Image 1: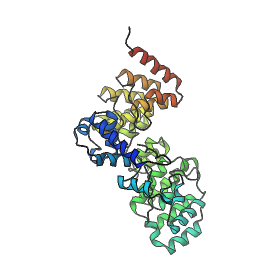
Image 2: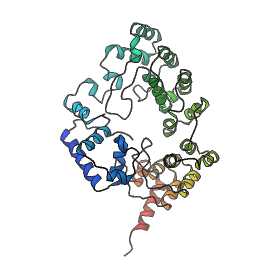
Image 3: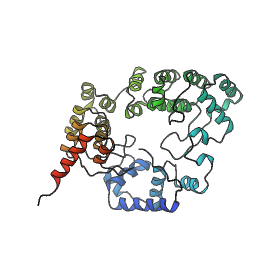
Length: 368
């Protein structure tokens, strides 16, 4: 789920009120509150709405959820950010300008400028640099990156990569970063537009996988971001696509062969992806199998929205009609911007879908 952005001058009192509002919504059994709690409280991640509503929720739980909704690990960290704002807390600065450590910051600058010779010298002089991490807060990813993770330009900082970025990646990999850093970097590469636009995404996938990156770990991330060339490259490196990935790819025959072996979580995720990418027959099959068209997408898969939101934004009129005719609610709002599927269609300038929603709303109005 995307994180919310703090206002320029955040108020701790206002955030406390948001936590109390979340408690109230939970008590009123509002479905959006269950979804937010599932996303941001680990012990509720796989709970049904009913289990979320029956769980005891303390004010400290609601405050933790609010903190994580804004990209902070805890309420204490969020409060510290507001009360003791420093360089690393300035969320308006690009990430590389928020780095306090001078040596780490120089290394990132050498990566960004493609200065391979000086990067080699810096790593030799500071051999533990490759194991070091920096802490960023106020975002939904890139919170504790190592040096290697800066090669992906994801999140976007400059909008480009040096022409020798694959050589730079090799230098960093040969310095033996942690396995977690290698896997996390692969996830950033396969989901970032800049590596693709610079024509190096597949090469970076190759070199990371040669240095033991797990091709399975970022497969879903690549699919959720529509990076299908990256998906195929990961499969070439041995990644095994399950039901959700097959739903995203629209390979109906393979999807059907996996359906009977899938669990409810896989089917839920598959519906989210099939609706997002316009794979009508797969959506129909999942609805026929009993998937709920009004259910929020699962955590980690645009979970602030429903399949109808995603289909409306993407312009898939056939799927919008199919979901609505299968009972999808038109009034459910996303949990970030509080928009209905019709609002999302309007934002995406999907005029045919806007007109369809108006027609369906008129049909549901009581007659005098």
